[in-house]
Image 1 (cartoon, helix red, strand yellow):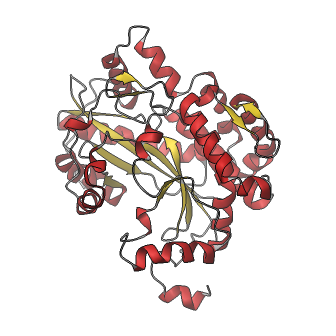
Image 2: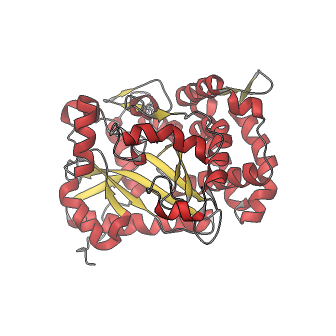
Image 3: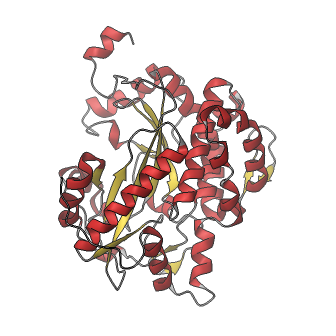
Length: 389
């Protein structure tokens, strides 16, 4: 599509690139907690206006009335993105304290049940509820979304097609939702199958180029089946309105250090695949095997064995991470995020799911887990503030 055509095209076809490629943006979904009990709080209608006084449009509602999302500014490094998010958490915690609330971050709230869930009153999510019916009232899930700036739409689709192969590895490292409905799911990421009850989720197919992507989504939008391309909730998708590729497969991370390491890996892999290319055409086309790896990653997390798409054998996640770090090293250096990439060792030692189980103990104390999640977001006794623009 030429520049003149793009200027008059609908938003889901026009690519609005930033000044620099490989800029980074982070979106973090978090849950609201009642102060003291740490029970999930259904108060986003009250909270969101206060957060927007501080963060403007970078604080948004989510599907459920117990959730909110904060987005960082575009940054040039993983460290800067993490520091931006850290500051936003700190300010959000102070606003919430003024309302008698706290927040926590993980892939799921460990004890929330669907019977108590309310859908957000925001028009977008009322529309989602109308379309999804009772599916919209399933237990809320919380994700970490990482945006990487890409210069043109064909390169963006090339990145999406190739990064699909790496998505299960990102899920395995980020798995942070072992508990749901008050019990151990047996999975490292219960969020993954819960979120997949929605349509238009999971691993997208290979599109080849921007025209292939546009041709695929056009009937959905033209027919009115979906309002726009933001209702495509795949594990990775292009975001033409801001000129990024958005990686969406990861569970929300309790600790900022883990956000930083995962962001470094996402941007390094994107640079690797666009500037050099690692995965083979055979691997790109192996959708069924990618989906099997996705399930294994959700089930076993960092302890998973994933299928080598070229070799046809399984490898431990730890071995795959070592191999990826080696080939990503030069790219991480170019992007200034090599030190942050080293933080993956922390996730291999014990990712979020492993830490939650360790916190819960052998006789699972899920209240202790939720209290830990709240303390990791902000320490008890944070000074409340009144939100001002």
